[in-house]
Amino acid sequence: MTPKQKNRLFVVLAIIVGVSIATALGLTAFKENIRFFVELKDVDAIEAGSSGQYRIAGIVKPGSVKKQADNISYQFVLTDCKADVSVFYTGQLPDLFREGQTIVANGKFDTNKIMQASEVLAKHDENYVPSETASTIMEQQANVCIDQLNKAGTADSKTY
Amino acid sequence: MNDFNFSEFIAMGGYAKYVWSSWALTIIAMASLVVSAIRKRKILYRQYHQQTQQSAARKQRLARQQSKS
Amino acid sequence: MWQAIKNFYHRMGTPREFYRIAGYWIPIFGVCFAVLFIVGAYLGLVVAPADYQQGDSFRIIYVHVPAAWMSLFVYVVMAFAGAIGLIWRMKMAFIVMITSASIGATFTFIALATGSLWGKPTWGTWWQWEARLTSELVLLFLYIGIMVLYSAFTERKTAEKAAAILCIVGVINIPIIHYSVEWWNSLHQGSTVIREGGPAMPASMLTPLLLMALSFQFFYGWLLFIKARTQALTQEQGSSWVKQIIESKQVK
Image (tube, rainbow over all chains, first blue to last red; front, side):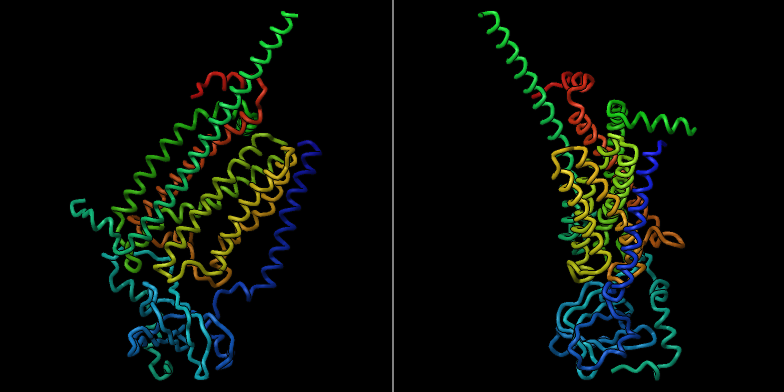
């Protein structure tokens, strides 16, 4: 390499390093804003009846889904095995909505700390399994947390 | 594939419009890349030949004018 | 060995040698692409079993994921080519960089559009402003920006340098896209294939995905060689080897 080429190599590397540092700083500063949803353990800090719009994510607690009398509204509980949050939603649920599935609900908390969701999204995991071989094993794996929850006793896992 | 059922295959378990539009969109986008690449090449050839023809014609004209004078 | 690599590198760096060598590989890449695409599509659409949760909608993965991988791969190739062009002033490196841009942009568009078509039935939304989706959209704008910047200059050498610098600056977006699903909580799920503990997918579903990914790679190589050859001819017009090649072609 000639000295000129070495200089240019140095400039290219300097650009990459500079941009990386700037981006890392920027992303750290806005870390909270990049989060797509609030974790359930942080919901406690949100005031009931506040006007803020929040996205929360959690597993749909088995047995908690209640279809309302109007047939298009649902009430269900999202859980992360520690904290529970009730969600009320009117509208069409995504195809992947089912018990034990991770769901993202977007809405406001009413005075009873129930989320009045305007949007319910399903979050898929990275696992793909053929339907023929998807036995209860898979379901059990998905519900490890739910099993723990059940063993711990229902007293702790109170719903709405 | 003994149990292959064509209408079932087209229906895609109720997701036909999403699956087929995804695949169609992919193939059309890739095909349009190929078409534009081939067209670019043809344009290059055509322009080159036009230019060489024009410059040849100009040379001829010049030669004729020179022989007249 | 090192000497051989160096020789090859220098040969590929000159437009004339590149034209000859690429011409040899174009039909091979084209055939590999077509065969792998047909086999991959057949296995993916017909043979692979439906997913236990998503049913047949998961078959979108066979175009979505290869396109998304290629959108990142093409960008990395462009950034490398841009750096080589800037440091060693190699003509062919800039040609590879600039002819890759429209291919990469198309792969990014395919990834975004098929992702949207997949998200609607499964997640319940066409689009969300979350980390993975947004960073991939930024990638599309980067590709478009590079193309626009290149065409904005009348002086080709200035255009090449400007586009290469933008390309190198934008490469920071590539790890952001890849790690977006790990660094922040997002709607998009984590990686299925490239992850610790191996792919979270049985072979019957994974094989068509890998075949499609390989076919997209061949498609890129094939089209890149075709486009780069045209670009080399355009830039080297006036030199005798270009005249010889073009004059031997019939024009309809």
